[in-house]
Length: 199
Image (cartoon, rainbow, N blue to C red; front, side):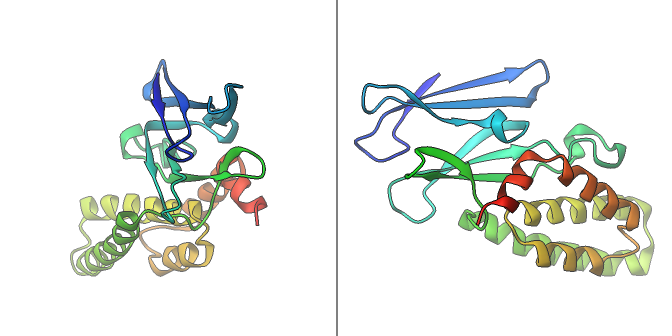
């Protein structure tokens, strides 16, 4: 349990973090606004899926109201891979003043994450060229994990065209089965469905 000022310097919130039996794989966050003296829940992570790892907080547009970031578990054990090897795409939340709650947001990305996206794409491209020459099986496994993770990251920020264009660029590393599993996972992903339904 802790206290924060997510909605500006004159605000006050209590936040609660609870980890489940799987520790980092099952992390729930609740944020209660107590500014007015009438407590109100403004964020419940489980309303939007299952998450893991700590929450990140940042102010995307420097307006003094902070955005929240959780790490979505909807791709956990993708392709029967290990839990720690699985994609954990960032799920971004923005406060809606009119509704008085946090909701999933697309195209809200921390600057360092934008840089990570660019660096990931460069790394994938370089390693793909290396794999074409060597056909190294270990490198192929690393590449597949990286491509799937990056596609999941892009889809979670609303970059649909960019995500599927990148996926199509690396056939031979990822295939129809991977695409089908991504789509199946997204169909059950509360966060992804929420950003798809929001304008």
